[in-house]
Length: 441
Image: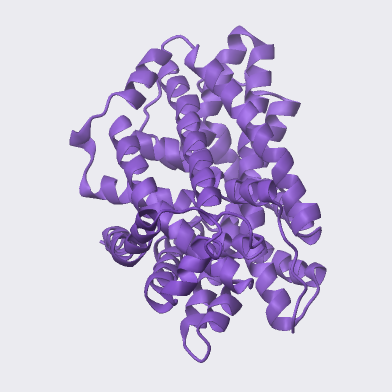
């Protein structure tokens, strides 16, 4: 059944795509991966892969979405009728749903810690015991479930409002606010005593620590951070107007994402070194180590500790919401097109299913780890591989060029367009396979 399709404005689509890219992958995942793989060496490899591999993959997915003006499943079905490609499109939708479900649990943690910052603050806890707050919270049967429900419920409400009134307005307001908050946090962090060691860690590369696993992780992080392979880029691009510049939108989204990730690194690492915490603390770095910093700060100045902790966890919460909303939209848009349901009815079903899976992930940590593993290493990789192969090999070259150049109206050099098409065909698919097999082994 045909569904009337809304469109983002020029700024709206950039803010929405940037909001999808700027998430916990930047604030939660990027700093601890930098810590695990040698600081600046990881950052350099990450930046190279972002431009050479992730940007072409992002463009490929954007071109498919705007060309079809459909959700992920229907886009591949319409552009390759009578083939099995649509089922690969469905893979990305399933991956987006799984990520939205367990990601909501992590988003709930950020909401919980923001509430703690507002109500009690970490200055009331002894610095040596504050790191145990995270373990006690996640070990509770009620607290994380309540936070998960509130986080998911708010995300669904934004999606129900629609593309322009919900997602567009939320992104247009929150992305500038995010940058103000994260820059303010960075300025404070680098001014802490002992922060210089953290700056050196981020700026002086040690390539001896960049193992093959670290290189693959840098490539995988650039994919994860840009929401490639989950159908988000395709779905949001399907709301893009035909006169909008796909190359410009893709480059700006990449720049926003990289800047935010780097600034997040300069927020977390100087503070981590200032507090004498190991940078290799792993996924718990944000929720166990950073509150310790706020507790030490609060011991000296309770007001400063309270204000900074509120700003930090508010930043994490907003970043998590923008990404969660984008993954929910992938699922909702497919239900609307496939079943002819209203946006409200489709959103309600996704809320119920994601809430249930999220609850199970929250209560059973091995299931949480399994969902993270299978979505990041299987569904996302298969989706990214399918989109790039489709755009590079299945899609008609003339159609690809027409979308890339807006039917020739954009002044794009032949060398530039040919270079991206070459990268999509010959560079991106092998790179995805490298990530896949390295993570598998």
